[in-house]
Image (cartoon, rainbow, N blue to C red; front, side, top):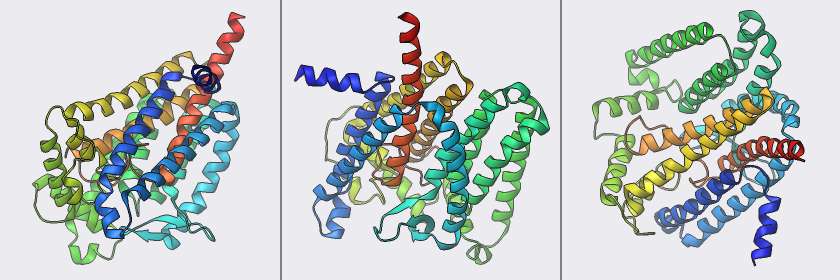
Length: 390
């Protein structure tokens, strides 16, 4: 048994601590998904085991993809990034007009013949961060030039964000500001970053002023604009009306029931009242069943993962590897923090999932690929260190 374990550890190259974080997050996911899908299983007249087995299958698929992607030399991802980003643009356009409508939003594409759905913004996020790392690394010699570096790097960010905005504003905003942060790490001139930040704040301010100025009768014909308005109003005023406020209220009750420390797997009561407790609000279920200590443990896992990504950046000999690891790492951690902030009512309801913990399909797959790419950079660094020591 010990020999088999040692062999498995040898095959899992790269940062072993990141592998540990992945395993722990998947274990938390198994417990939380099994517990939180009770009401869904009852509604669908199936057993809880169906959703648990589905999540286990997704975890296994994710780990396999992580293993495969981490065995590929990260330098190949430079060309793959370019192809993925180009592919993501027509897919996002197709999704806007012909996407599958789920939960009042057209964010998914249904694959023909197999009937599976995947969220195109998940692919676009991964592709953009990879492509951004490629562009930044290629332009390091002229990185402070406005026309030669700043504008060509900014263009794909704006195009991708604009295509995601109509059906998923929160994801578009998270992706945009994450990309700006990666640009800063990639040594884009600080004055250009501040100019972009200022213009972005003004643009978003005008955008929301227009939304709040228009009556609901007009907004209901403008896609999800009415939903964005109501979510912000409910968050600002603390209204008890509307689905979003109901979600927040139930999440608060779940957190209050959890207390400081608790070990009560499967004992959540709020899973019967909280909409989507297995995805958007799974963090509230974790706290209800394991207390604030359990919730803090999840936060620490993501922060520890970010710390390990920063260590990779420090050791990476090439700009592309460093930017790839830190870009994907920051994107995943920011998404996790936003999801948890929604659960504790620090920000308006967004609909983003908790990476590797929430029940999901395409989100688990693309998140696993992102982890695998980060581990690929780490594996390459380890190999170079071993060659130097030999």
